[in-house]
Image 1: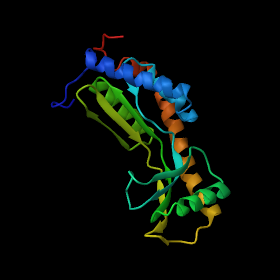
Image 2 (image 1 turned 120 degrees about the vertical axis):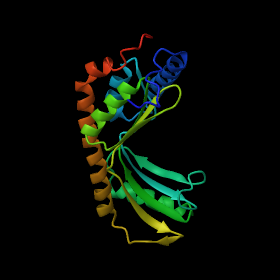
Image 3 (image 1 turned 120 degrees about the horizontal axis):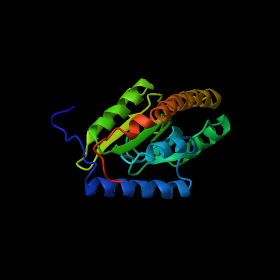
Length: 217
């Protein structure tokens, strides 16, 4: 255990308030169909544990971006996105629309699953991190935020392909090859997500006892 971190916030009002806020947000998003369908069961399983509450999470996506300068998310951003494999035709149409916007930079990306969650004790954070790492998620960690241990679990199956830079088309895109490439990375990430799903499911009893000091419902 890390000597400079408190072992638990489980029996505090601040944790209870944070957990309830996150779960209310999750319930609303679920009702409004704003959660990726292939990650709902995993998030429901995690939220069934009183000492865990999930935050913004994604099962992986393919996206087309357009921006006036690299990294400018305020003025640019996602033009199209899909949480499923994409066809060459719809990918090509989306890229052409992104170019027409007139921004100087356009790129496409296949992005891996990202899970974000909070727990109230360091022991449970370490347990979840161990499970995720064993399932293949090497980009896993946590940090203390005064009310909880915030955890992030991020896949490594990502690829970014530039389309234009400073208004100059970089490559002559073959949308069939590009769609196949992006879909390959997306599906690799989703297969790894299935490994994490099975690992969490088989560890629910252990996770349920992860914060033994917790007394609040």
